[in-house]
Length: 138
Image (cartoon, rainbow, N blue to C red; front, side, top):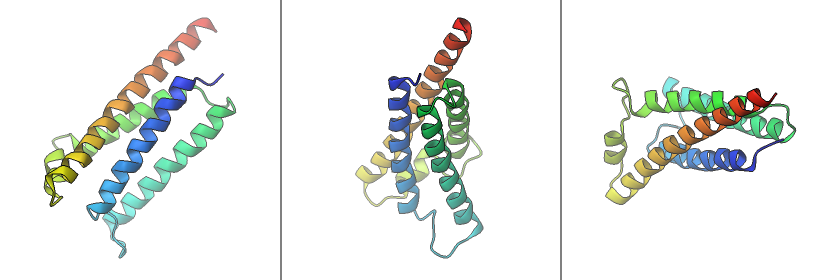
């Protein structure tokens, strides 16, 4: 049986992710003349929302469970950390802040990123809890 709280967390993470994708587009990471960087961004974006959509559909049909969301959430947290918080990134929060002419817009973009990362962590932990709890009762 699908869990309403988990579905709400996934939906919230998806909404925040759409905001973060919009931030990337505003910062011109997706150009109309496709470069290798913008093509990579496009492929990752399409794959991300495709996996989420298929996952939500399969979760509603009880074909996948909390394990799917725990693994996906963990991968997403790792990807987000590497992309924006690791020492190897070229787009840390300070870069995002500086990419906007308005401090308010920059802080809104960074706040969305931080909220996204926190919601992804909570989603991964909660779905992991549900996965373990289900495994113990099975």
